Length: 362
View (cartoon, rainbow, N blue to C red):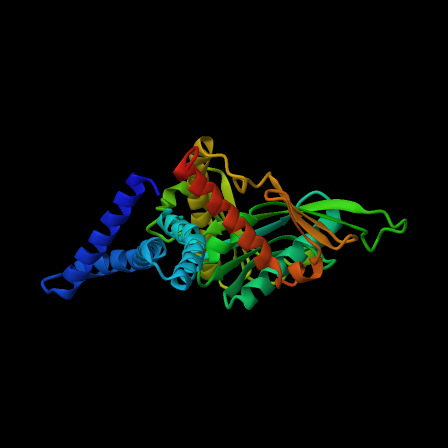
């Protein structure tokens, strides 16, 4: 490891010890204690990794000394074997420490708003959008997350024109953020008499859920319309004007919410979605500025970017950003194998960020 990184590790260990002493003492206010506790808990796993690395280095140094100075041939051979094993472990321990030092995406801990929309391909695109939405619903269930449907716009054939949900639990946004983009499907539609493969698409947007403190919305900048909710084919599903359409005048963003029978609840949900979309716009602006400095193979998550193809005749799913192909489309669509894609995307993102931190030849 380079000297500057070693100095940084020493600094973190000292800071961790300072925090430990401060928290053990008295005289801290509740707010100060909470702030220092948070910093201490964030530093603890990093310092544990640094300790493991230092112990392995010290052990390697001690065993190397035995291997060089011992006159006992058997002991010398044993020491050399152990030294080889330790030296194989050291790069992995160093890598773990470097990864722990990478700044976390501040939104990783957030819950998320999932939005799936049918793209090109008519009814087939709407059917695929519905399948994607259910894939995420099953995946959320497998991970023990809460999946609350916010809005469904059905086509009447079992497809969804668009659908949205609030997903809450541990590391929701961290695991789903790379799902944003265009998902393409290739298969023979049931209505296709000639057996020809059709290509259609759906777009997925995963937005970090924003709190009121994150995005201030001025009521004067909103136009709020209420109307009667309707179901597929235009039939009325409600006898009161409970559906809400909120237009954010400065950006032109429009959110419609009609899932609840209460106008008040629909308005609250619509504001939550609007807040998350506005926060996501700010986030994308930050990411674009960062992406100009660092080209990541994982991509920008741009909604116009084709990220994945689901080929049903061949039973394969291909993520184009990392050239990963899985021949287990059924398990991906059931949510079971989605972690394999997510883990690979997270690993690629980590590797790209690590390379950016280390620089050329790092």
